Every structure is written in structure tokens, then in C-alpha cells.
Length: 431
Ligand code: NAP
Ligand code: HSE
Image 1 (cartoon, helix red, strand yellow):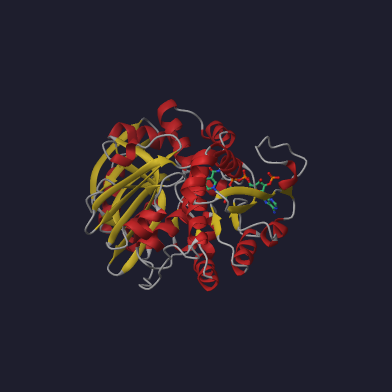
Image 2 (cartoon, rainbow, N blue to C red; image 1 turned 90 degrees about the vertical axis):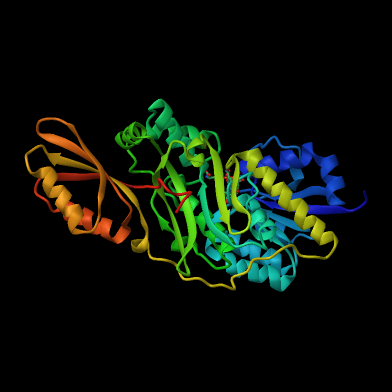
């Protein structure tokens, strides 16, 4: 094979290392599948003094990412440095120079997707980002290509490996949040700033990308209603378990009344729910489409080689197109749907209250729910003497009404604390 496609990488940390290893290990088959040899000619990193132990010559490393983008011996740019600046400007420059770009950067795609797609279109080259959502799982291509003839109704996913790993170990081992987060960081699952994971920002960015593709619209990361797992307590996890649920950080995007509803938050899922069985750093994406029906995608959502696999698949894809002077499938925003306010969501809720253990308190609490049109499905009391805990599960209610209920509960003299409020997605596959 005489043709060579030369790859310039921006970043070589967890994901970059995985990419270089896969390209080296699978080189022969990749060459045949691509129709050209893929060669890493340049790699930009921050710290040139660090030995990376990768199968590339030392001369490929530089600390000048702009030089990688501009280099004559770089045909395809792979951005795995992360963040918005300078990654966004570097990608735009690469596209302007007519170089296809592969990125794993969900934060950037969720914030600047439409501008980046426009730059790629203007340059007539590909911008591929399969690894940006759910690591190894092919989900961008299925939404953009395989389901292009169908109408997607809903996408529900466990989209963040770090939080799923943390919640799994808290559930199964009773491990502490801090210890498990440190393990997730050591395993290479967590973002450089792990608050992006635990605060739900990472999952929200992924959910925005999926919603945009699923509904031919443009959902910005900030459009996603977002709550993280920081406030999920051992009591919530134990209570969920006793009631037949597990707590998962989920992303849900759907079309309701010509609006796009898109949210990321921890939720109670019934133990028999397929997403409840997704453990550790695994991710899963459930897609409901008009003609195809229900589809489930499952796999490793983070880590060097799983993410590297998705990036290398994209590199082969854009390289094949480059060899034929073609472009792959592109995004469309033609339906331009407004975002549905979270107050209009209807779902079930779990509410945990610390209350004074006195006669009449339960009646007061029940009246407060009733006054705001929130119907209680189950209630029981735990604890003793001075302070008791009231656990309530509601029927389906409007989020705005539930929020008003919580505000009113906080004002009741015998309610000492609204300890937890979580959504119960008991009917997520049946709504
Ligand atoms: P990482 O381990 O922190 O690696 C980042 C790399 O970029 C490092 O090699 C770093 O250099 C380099 N870098 C950062 N800023 C730079 C700059 N200004 N100039 C030159 N080099 C710079 O991050 P990662 O986990 O591989 O993640 C990379 C991207 O993939 C992120 O967008 C992330 O969201 C995404 N992603 C990650 C995973 C995962 O499992 N980790 C999965 C899917 C997607 P040094 O090595 O010298 O510090
Ligand atoms: N930090 C991310 C996660 C990496 O934990 O899922 C994959 O995007």
C-alpha cells in the first residue's frame, strides 16, 4: 500500500495513548480497511519532559499544537486535548486548512457544534466525534446514518462512566463517595476536572449532542436541565434499594408537543429496568424510534482503549473519505425545536423529609402535597422520638407543582429539613 495518511494529534493523555496503541497494534488490518497506511507524524502535549512509552519516535512530540495543525506532513487532525480553548480555535484552523478533524471533545461539540459543522461544511471536509458520546459505543453514526430514515421519539442513556462507577460501588459496597471518585480518577475515567462528571456537566454535553442529532435541531449544553450526583446520600441509595429501585445518573431527551425536553439528573430506576443493570463505568443508550422500535446500545463509556477504539474508527472513516475527496454524513438543524421548560415535565418523585415526630405532622405534609396538585402514591415513616423521617413517593406530577410543594414544605414549622428530592423514572420505557 503506497498511500499514507499522516495524522497529527493534539493531546496524548489517556485517550491519545489508547489511540496510538491501537493504531500500532492493528496497523496491518487498518491499512487494508482504510486503503492507506495511517502514520502518526506529530503529537502535541503540554509536558515534553514526560516519557510516554508509546510506539512512536521521540521526534513526533512537540509542545506547539498550532504547529501540528499547520504542518505539511499532517493530513488529518485528531483533537484529544479536551477543553474549549485552544481546542476550538485549533479545530477551526484545521478545517479552514482543509484537514478533516476527529475529536473526542463533547464539551466543545455541545457548546460550538453548529459553528464547527459549518466550518467543516464550508471546507468540504469531515468533522467526526463518535468518541465524544459514550466512549466505545457507536451511537453518533446510528443516529446520523443508520436511523436517518426513521423518526426518533426518545433517547435515554447512562452517559457518564465516572458517576455510574461511583454509584455502583456506593450501592454494592456501601463505599464512600470520596474513595470511589479517587479510584475513578486513577482508572482514567474521570475528566481532568472531575466536577464535570459528578456535577452532570459531562453527561449534559453528551445529552445535548444526542438530542441535536435525534431531533434535527440544535441543543446547546446549557439548554440541558442538569443535576449531578453530589447530593445523593447513602440513605437515598438504601431507601431506593428497599423499594426495588437503583439510583442512576440518566440523560433523557424526547420530543413533547413540538418541543425538545432534555435533562440529566440522578433518578430512581426500577431494578428490572434494562438501564438498572448497567454497572461500573459502562454506559448504555436506549433509543425509541417510530419505525425501528426500541434499540439499546451498551458498552464501555470511558477509558483509554474503549475511547481510542471509537476515535480510530473515525480516523479510518475520515481517511477513506479523504482518499475519495468525499464527505461523510452531516448534521441537520432544519427542525429547530424550542427547549421545553423543566417545570412542564411530568414524572414521579421521591421526597425524604426530616420532621418532628408529633401528631398531625403527617396530615400537614399530606395536605401540602394535595394543595399543590401532587398526589401521594406511597408514604411511610422511619426513625424515632424527636426527629422522624418521612419517605414519600408521588404519582406522576408536574415538576412546577412539585417544586412549589417543596417550597411550601420547607415553610412548615414541623418539617426540619427536605433531605432529598429525586425523580422516579418508573415508566421511562412506557411513557
Ligand atoms: P488527558 O488525559 O488529560 O489528556 C489531555 C492531553 O492533552 C495531554 O496529553 C495533555 O498534555 C494535552 N494537552 C492539554 N492541553 C494542551 C495544550 N494546551 N497544548 C498541548 N497539549 C495539551 O485527557 P483525556 O482523558 O485523554 O481526554 C481527552 C479528551 O477526550 C477530552 O475532551 C475528554 O472529554 C475526551 N474523552 C475522554 C474519555 C476518557 O475516558 N478519558 C472518554 C471519552 C472522551 P500532557 O500529557 O503533557 O499533560
Ligand atoms: N469522564 C467521562 C466519563 C469520560 O466518565 O464518562 C467519557 O466521556
